[in-house]
Every structure is written in structure tokens, then in C-alpha cells.
View (cartoon, one colour):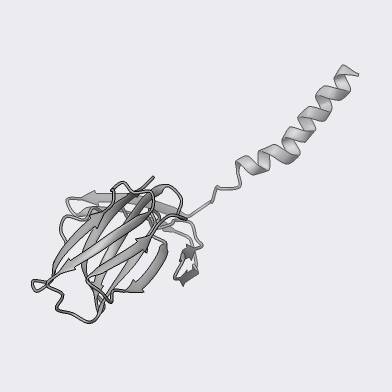
Length: 162
């Protein structure tokens, strides 16, 4: 009986567990890495083609190597004729954010709220000097509020939602 149980466990591991462990491997003809002062690059030779599907919610790319870019925003060019004052009551907030704009000189202002993964949560136009943004039903996370004048991004705020 012990021999049967050992044999059964061994066969189960070989047939069901081992293929899963190697499912993320790929055999390529060659490849390499390179780096310099401007960044780094890696390449793989052997993949004939790839497909990329994009939507507002994100991008899916099939292939051997997946691109992932990490960047830090050092500064953002702001429009000189708009003095944006942002107030969150409080920041971190649990509910309503108030966006207050002084020297309102544009009729084409809008905002987009993104979650930490870069997915757009909300997008609306700014019609008044004071705009309320309801975050009550959003999960606890870090968000980015981007203010636009037409298609030009003029200000980004980091919002912490409790």
C-alpha cells in the first residue's frame, strides 16, 4: 500500500506539477543585454513576430520579452497664464476633493483621474473655478489627478485615498 501511494504521488508530481514549473520558459537562438549612461537594453533573437493590443484600459503584448518602463517625473511644464491651486480636504482624503483654480483664462480645461497602475478612473471637463471630485467609492490607493488645457497636460497632482 505504501509503495502504491508513493508511486501515485510521484506520477502526479511528474504529470501535473512539473509542466507548470516550466511553462514560462522559452528557447531562443541567442540574445543579450547592454547598458550605458542613457539606460539599458536587452534583446532576444528567435521570435518571428509579436502582437500588441491597445485600449483605454491598457496594453497586452505577446512575446518573449515584455517592455516595462520605469520613469520619474522631474518636472512638468505648466501654462504661464493659469495659476492652479489644489486643495484636498484632507489629503490624504477619504471622500471629496476640491480643485480650485485662480486666474481662470481657458475654457478648455479638463481633468483625468488615474489609479496607481495608470488606468483612467474618471475624466470630466472643468466648468467652474471650484470643482468637486467624488472619491468616496474608490478603493484605498494612490491616484494621479492630471489637469489638461485642451490636449496639453498642465499639472499633475498625487492624491492619497484612505
